[in-house]
Amino acid sequence: MTDDDPLTGLDDVPWAKLQHSYGMADDVPGHLRAMQAGVWEGRYPPSAQLANHIVHQGTRSQAAEYTVPFLVRMALDPRLVDRHQLVSLLVAIAIGLDNNYLPNGYDPREDRAALADIRGEADDMARWIDDAADDEQRKQREGSCAQVLIDAEAVVRSYDAVRAALPDLAVLLTSDSPELRSWTANLLAWFPESAATSVPLLKAFIADEVSPGAAATGIVALGLLGAETTVPFIRRYLDSPIVELRWASAFASTRFGIADPAVVEVLTQVVARPPEKTETMSFLSGSYMSLAALALAGTSEATTLRSVDAMLAGLAGCGGVEAFDDRYYTAQTLFQLVFPDDPAEPPRSFGDLSDVQQRVVRFVADQGDAGWPSGGMDAFRRWKVPTNHSDLCVYAGIVQAGQ
Image 1 (tube, one colour):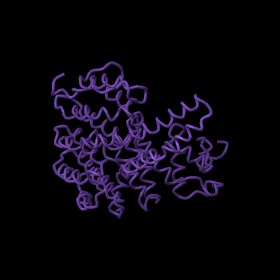
Image 2 (cartoon, one colour; image 1 turned 135 degrees about the vertical axis):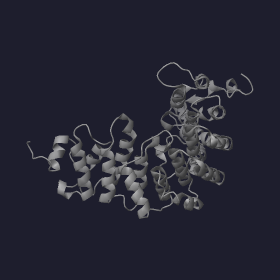
Image 3 (tube, helix red, strand yellow; image 1 turned 45 degrees about the vertical axis):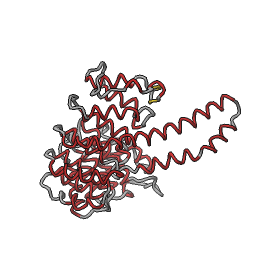
Image 4 (cartoon, helix red, strand yellow; image 1 turned 60 degrees about the vertical axis):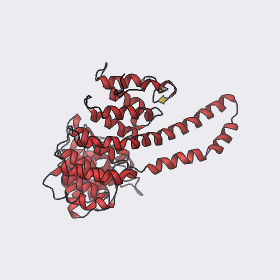
């Protein structure tokens, strides 16, 4: 390795003493080298393999923090291809899965408080260990307590490691790759403590950006950072002739509690007829529809017939494997709104449902056996609505019993 090699120092890290989701992390250097070389064996690229090991299903492992310097240097190396995947991995190392924090953004104080609570319980943990019935149980309790602390520290340390790299990574906002620019804007969205630096960078980026998806990502990032001073800048895009920018402005506005008729109008339009997905809008797998539904859910218009019909129209237009995220997250939002929690008194018949509930039941019945939106059956069970398709059609009055 030479001094300009992003992986300089890789073998100095005690990987075999660090944990990831599948044991010890001595295989991490191999994944990083494969990522740098751009060649691999097997079905999945090395970036996906590494992510599966160090941030499996969004759970940040002890080893994740130690990969950050190498990923940052590779992301900054213009000799490498697909560098947006490296920044995407840095987002995962920082926060895990973004769907856990949308549409409201990430507050690092919560994870830091959780770590402080665990450290503050050291005396209670020691007593619990001492109360073990035998040596075997004592070892199990010691291991359990140690793991809880390791996991909580991994969350905070991984986040802080990525945050420390933001000043270096910000230059990627001017990259030649729209995907890389977009993912860099996405990354900045999750660090509210760095907003004073990130906000001016994002404003300049949005003003100059030629990719609608990337510019929309930047506007959403401003909203997630939550700086009130950005509201006038965000609002100026609500009347943009570009649908992606109107959507981003409406979505970001709701972050500040703004849900006037103009904002709701844009959200209902987009959830019913979203723009085409591209790799340059990087939040929630690029699902304009689902993000619009999430934003709409936080407004007073969420359960009106107009909003519900817009979500149903969007779901009706979803088809194919590529639309899985649109269907999953939009349907999840819809059913949580229309069939919340457990009813105080289950409805005795279809007529006892509200108008919007009846609308959703008829929609599901019309989809056929293979058309259940995600989350629907669980919601129906809670509300004592039939989950068998033929029974549902009878329940909704679409067909007569026995037909």
